[in-house]
Figure (cartoon, rainbow, N blue to C red):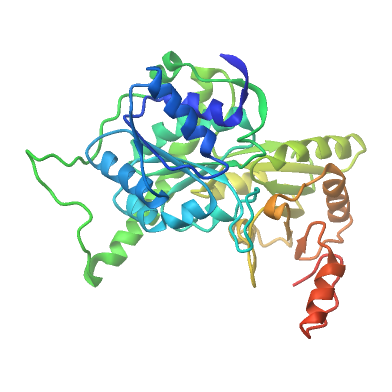
Length: 405
C-alpha cells in the first residue's frame, strides 16, 4: 500500500509483514522509532510476536541468537555504539550460521560523540561474516527487509539492512509498504537448517582448535561468495512479485558511454542522480553505480558496471584513518583485473552528518572529469581549521585542496 510514512515506520511495517517470531529491542538513536513501532504493533495485536525488552545491545543480539537457534524467525535493530557493544555476539551469530535479520540505522562512532549519519558503524564490521545490504531510499529500505529474511533463511546466514540514520529513518516520504499477503507469497515459512531441541540434544558453537579453525573461516568466506548469486536472484524474484526493481547487488545510472563513474552507497545516491542528470545534459560523460550489496561484494557485477569507465570515484561516508577508503579496497581489486590504466580516487564525504550538497558534488565530478582529483580527498574539508590545529600542536603541514595522502 502506498503511504506517506516515516522511514522507520515503513521498515517496521515491512518487518511485521515478515512475521518474526521474536523481536529483541534496545533503543538507540536513530533506530528507536523502528522498535517502538514494532512494540505498538505487538501491543494492539497486529503482530503476533514475542517482543523482548532487554538491558543492552549485547543482550538484544544474544536473545536473537538464542531465538534463532531454537528455530524462531528473529529480528533486532541497532546503530553506532550499540553495534560495537554487541560485536562479540555479532560474530557469534555469523559463526553459528544463524539467519538473524538486523536493521542498522547508520550513525557515526565517537569520540567525540556524534549522533548523526555516516557509515562508519557497519563498515567497521565488514569482516564479521554478516551480509550487508545498503538502502538508497526508504522504499528500498522497506523492500530490503523482505529480501533479507528470504536471503538469510535460504543461506542460514545473518543479514544487516543498513539505512542512513535520520536522513532516511526520520524522513517522511511516499513508500509502497509491502503487504503481508504479498510477503507471504514471497517469503516461505522459516525452516531452520539447525535447531536446538531438548528431545534431540546437540551442541552448537563448541570450541574449535587450531586443527580446524582455518577451515571454519574458509567456509565463512565460501558462504559469502555463494551469497552473491542468491542476493542477485532474490532481487530479481522480488521484482517479479512486487513489480518494482529494488535490492539486488547494485544499480547503474546513466553509465552508458560514461568515462567518469562515481560509486556510492546509501541516500547520497539520490543527490548524485540529480547531479549526473545535469552534467549529462551538458554533454559531460559521467555516470553512477549505486552499490547495494557491500558484503558480499559483487566483484563481477561491479566489473561489468565499470567496464567503460576511465576514471572511477569512490564516494565514501567512512574511511580507515592512515589508509583511506573502505570500499576503495574492493574497487581496487576489481580495477586491478583490467590493467588498462583506469584511475581510482576516493572522496570521503558526509562524516558525522555533514551535508553533501549538489553544489559540492557538482564541483567534485567536474574536477574528476578534468583529471584534477587526488588519490584521497575529503569533501568540503576546512583546510584552514585543520592547519591551525596542526600548527598549535607543533606539526605545521601544508594542505592541498584535497588533503592528499
